[in-house]
Image (cartoon, rainbow, N blue to C red):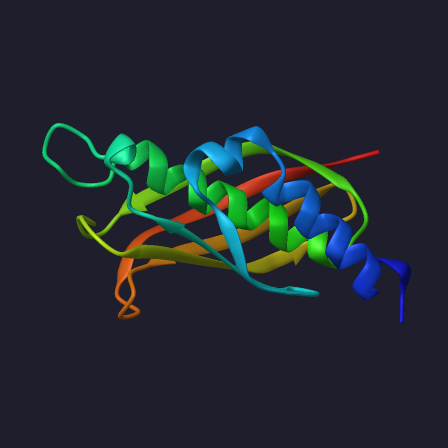
Length: 137
């Protein structure tokens, strides 16, 4: 087993993400963290609602972006940076918990392309994204 897939690395990664001020503010936590198989979740909070009383698109984009970074880093001990994130907002989200997962499309050495999706408690798609991420040294 490689160093990046050991339980100690994954625990360190969990602590790093969940200890970040942004994740704390958004209420994002891990539901599952295995190499390449990651699910994060974010509860609806009134601070994340827009003037239509639905979760703001920026909050949905944030979880779609976050799951991509977490998924890449679950497979490689690297830092990453978002180059681009193309999002599609499929349905409004007003209550419950939003879950996100991602699939690596192209595991390049310097650039990775990853698809992510955000779903409600019942598995219905709320939003999707295609991200281009840089692998940092």
